[in-house]
Amino acid sequence: MAADNYILGLNYIGHDASASLVRNGEVLSSVMEERFSRQKHDRSFPLESIRYCLDEAGISLDELEAITYYMEPREHFEQRVIHHLGRYYPRSVPLFDDMLNRSLKVNNVEREIREKLDYLGKIYFADHHKSHIAKSFFLSPYTEAAVISIDGLGEISSTVIADARGTSIQILKRIDFPHSLGMLYNAVTHYLGFKATSDAGKVMGLTSYGDRAQCIDKFRKIVQLKDDGEYEFDLSYFEYPFQRDLWVSEKFIETFGPRRVPGEPLEKRHQDVAAGLQVMLEEVYYHLARYAKKATGQQYLCLSGGVALNSVANGRLLQKEYFEDIYIPPPTGDDGTSLGSALVYNYEVLGNTERYPLKNGFLGPEYSDAEIEAALKRFNLEYYRSEDVCREAGAMIADNKIVGWFQGRMEVGPRALGNRSILANPGLDDMKDILNSRVKFREPFRPFAPSILAEDVGEWFDYDHEAPYMLFVFDVKKEKQHLVPGITHVDGSGRLQSVDTKRNPRYHALISEFKKHTGIPMVINTSFNIKGEPIVNTPTDAVRCFLGNGLDCLVLGDFIVRK
Image (tube, rainbow, N blue to C red; front, side):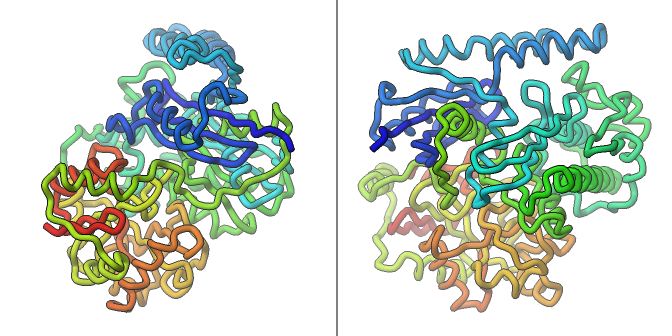
């Protein structure tokens, strides 16, 4: 029998540093460093994530076949520093220090890994977008698929289209920075008064309040769709290719109006700009998908990259039915590239052929009853052990209690999937406002997602489709919307998570219990954190969050705490 090949994948320097461990192509663990450091989007060396991955598998660094990294240093330097800065000189001078320093850090990765870990083994550098493509395709249930990776930029590419068959990935097309959907969304996010690189999700929520037709013609002058699936920007509207402090140009401001200062009220024109941006993104999505279909002839599509977190666009693309189905992995952004780089090495370098589709999204730490109880005692909390925690929690939510729900292994990716979640009753008119103001401390326009029993999706949503990782938005059936105002967005949609007994039997049992009380087969599910903080990892994190906001109850494993 062949020896096990353990591959440790790393992502850091870029945002959302992470580590992942793969054995012969099977994912054993994957986690973001922010969950340990408590620094949102932490980009530092993921030492704690590495320790977790190795400890979870019970192995040492000496047992690794290789450590992989999600970027190619030489390509990074040549493409960003030499090619991009040189091409746009002298306008690119303000970017010089930023790009050079980033490239020097990436070029120092091998030495840093060896010094910090005292590691003497193999180190492999994977192409950034191939890492995205690998994690999407190799974790999917498909043996063949078209694959599209879309983000801000990797070494220099922003969009890559590939044809994947078996264990082979053939790159068909690359679209390079500064023509980048991720950068477009970041630039408009900054223009609207939010953080450019981390608040795109807020803008996605805002888009539903605007008139989708009001600004789209202006965006079509900025983004031109070209032959063979390509697109190109009129760069006169932007500053991000040349400097980072100002993302859009005076021409953009003349076209759309003054930039919103952070904290200022959101006006109707801001909502219309957000809506126009979303429509433009969707039009490019369709353009890329049509080309991928034509170029590959494939029945299935895999999506990856940070832009694939746009669940509104994902839902609309799926309903176009260019492809029979679409797969998007839960860590679809850069946090998943540590996993993708390890999979590239497993299949392309080692030549392994066995495939291991992802079973569920729970790849992070788990804590024992003893560890949970120790945290509760440390905070001097009154608690008890439930004989049927799903029955009790379901009843509490039906009684309009807001519940912190902490179970099993932590989710991979940015979205809570029912193991580190805050749960509430979607049938209350004011629950969204209560959660935003009293529990999450975030903007009042932001919607909340439903976790719905998989068997009931078709009865409550217009599109009956599995969505286990909360990456698709569909319309709530009109006759049902009044029953679930807590999850129905202003446009009648919901970013659903379908819950089945195979992926998460305990969470399914809780929702089933809630349904018995209310007739509603879903609960509000939002991540177990407050604004500006990562999702909780440890029992201690959960208790601190519980004590610092408006949660009514805390359920840790089988233990229950009531305020």
